Structure formats: structure tokens, C-alpha cells
Image (cartoon, rainbow over the protein chains, first blue to last red):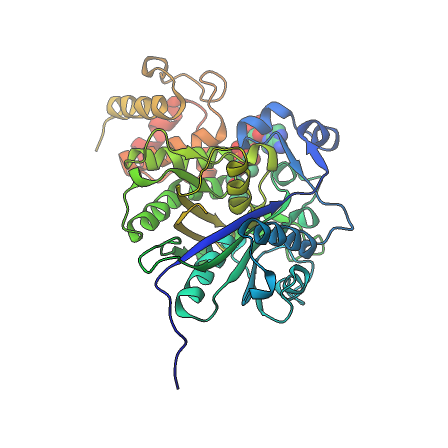
Length: 326
Length: 80
Ligand SMILES: CC(C)(COP(=O)(O)OP(=O)(O)OC[C@H]1O[C@@H](n2cnc3c(N)ncnc32)[C@H](O)[C@@H]1OP(=O)(O)O)[C@@H](O)C(=O)NCCC(=O)NCCS
């Protein structure tokens, strides 16, 4: 037996994202449930979110985001070796999203599989993809976080309908340009299966998402910052090296709490903190790559910046890593 | 173990840190929600810090029952 040639480092070659056109404002939700704009903004930080129409499937969103990332990387899809789709909202357990998405982006026939780590999914997928590249299992991998959460939300439940939304975000991962370049740092990841009930799709006939809001808030504001710090340490850096913090966009209050904790541990005051949730809502596995894409388009993140990504959510699952912005 | 006066002053510091409210405002009879304008998520952050500081577990369901600063001080005193 023999093993494939290995590569020292992996890096992100390009990113992209897609959101549905249809905007749902807080005022729109006020017409449906007993809520108000001020409450939503102050508790979760969301002003508006995007919801896909019935004709747009989750794989459709994933394909669009994947194509955008390939274009950004100026990478020929025929050269891809694998497609990984992080998702927790496919309409049915089979087929998976990744195989159809591979075909859809022009990489028919490559290795393709889904990763379900909910809101931590993109960081899980990116960690696996980078290790595949380093091990020589694949040279180029398209990683996509894609969600159509709107299918799983009870639009009469004000504790969840104000939060979640639809989107997809993607990255092309490939070998580093030089032997000593590290574009994707080691992943810090884990799970808390004793808290499986905290966020779940109910197994009853309603099949809708339910969460223990305060318990999740407590967990996210205490357990996630240490994961982010662990990722920084594994990368051989210090918190002061981080230019941009991109936590999963669960709730702006959680994002701010994580940033505050990192600053108490030495992260810079001028560290840029993602706040994409304000106009995008919580899009689970799509939120991190989409926030990065939007921030780069707005000039808030530049090529070469040190980015700290950290995803967390149902499972409970969490994962983070340091990456260099392409 | 902290006495009630120490718990009150420690709690006031936490409230100031989390919600930006002057420690002098944090007195026993004040209601967190109605007088100090602290919402349920800030209460969670206050509870987490109070747990660290006083070694008292404050579960979410109990937290909702702590309406006033005095309620919180008494709860912590009993459970530390
Ligand atoms: C969901 C969440 C916003 C709810 O906030 P909360 O403060 O825990 O809400 P509660 O259910 O305790 O309700 C607090 C008050 O607001 C009210 N309220 C709840 N939802 C409301 C809404 N959508 N609009 C207006 N008022 C609302 C409640 O009735 C309650 O009022 P009361 O105290 O007078 O009875 C919050 O818990 C949260 O965001 N948690 C984290 C969830 C998360 O990030 N999940 C994704 C993880 S990947």
C-alpha cells in the first residue's frame, strides 16, 4: 500500500454567498405575531432577514454560493476533487445535498457529502476540507454552508420566527502556495451531547424548530469564547493577532459577548467584529462564510487579514479556526 | 462566605459591568426589569457572573423568579 502525496498547508482560494431576494422586515413579522421592531432589535439585533420562495431549494442556494466562490477564486469547477455541504435543513434525510450540488456547480462525479453540525457546520466542513487537502485525499475542495431554515420554522412562534433565515455561503479550499504558508489553522472543535434537547426540530407532526432560548444564550455567551481562544492558541497566535472576528451570527448580543470576552483576553479594541445578522438573520451554517463575503465586499476585511471563525449551535456542537482572508 | 452587604456590593459591580448602571442605583428594593431596565438576556449574563463570584448556582427557571435586587441577594446568600 501507499499513501497520497501530502501538502503542508491549506488555504482558502475564494469565497462567495447568496441570499434570496425576498426581504422580511420586523414590521412584516409584527403583522403575523405579537412582537415589535424594538424588541427584536434589542434582543437579537436583527432588522431584516431574507426568505427563499417555495421554488428555490436548498441545493439551489448551495449551487449559487458555490459558483460565486469558484468565480472569486477563478477556479475551474472541473478541477475540484470534492464538495462538502454543511447543512441541517435538507427537506429529507436522503438524498444528500452535496452530490446534486457537485453536479450543479460543474463538478459532476466528485466525492460529495453533507456535514450536519448545525450552526457549527461550516467550521466543521472547513476543518475537514483543509485536512483532506493536507493529507492529499483531495487537492481542491468546495465547502458550502447552506440552509433553508424557513421550511422548519413555525411562523406563528414568535420565539423562533424572528431569528432564522435562508442563505448559503461557500469557500474553495486548496493547497497553500508555499511550503510554510498556513491559510487555514487547526480546528478547535467539540460537542455537548448532554444538551441535545436545547435546539431541536420537534419529532412530532409539526416538525418545527424549537429552542431553549435562555439556556442556549447562557451556553453561547460562556462556552464559545474559550473555543475561539483555543483555536487562536492552536494556530500559534495570540488574541492580539486577530484582525477580524466572525462568530456564527446567532444573535448580536451573543456576538458582542464573545467579542467582549476575547478583548478581556487581549484581542484588540480595533478588531473588526462581524454583525451581518442585522440584515441577514441567523442563517446557521451559512452565516460565517456569508458574513465574510459581505464584509469583504464592504471593504471591512482585506486580503491577508487574520480571521477568527467560530461556529456553535444545535448538537450542541462547536468549532473554530483561524484563517487568512483570500 | 460573603455576607448580605458584600453580596449586594458585589452584585452591584456586576450589574454595572453588564448593563452600565451606576452601582449606587443598585439597591435592594429595585426591580431589575422595571426600575433598572435590565432585560432577560442581561439577567442571564449577570447570573453567570454572580455564579462565578459567589459560587451559587442560579438556574434559568430560578432566575426568572428573582424580580428585585433583594431577591437576588437573598437567593445568593442561601445558595452560596
Ligand atoms: C430567543 C430569545 C431572543 C428569547 O429572548 P428571552 O429574553 O430569552 O425571551 P423570554 O422568552 O424569556 O421572554 C422575555 C420577554 O419577552 C417577551 N417576548 C418573547 N418573544 C418575544 C417577541 N418575539 N417579541 C416581543 N416580545 C417577546 C416574552 O413574552 C417575555 O415577556 P415577559 O417577561 O413580560 O413575560 C433569546 O433567548 C435568544 O436569542 N437566545 C439565543 C438563541 C440562539 O441564539 N439560538 C441560535 C443558536 S445557533
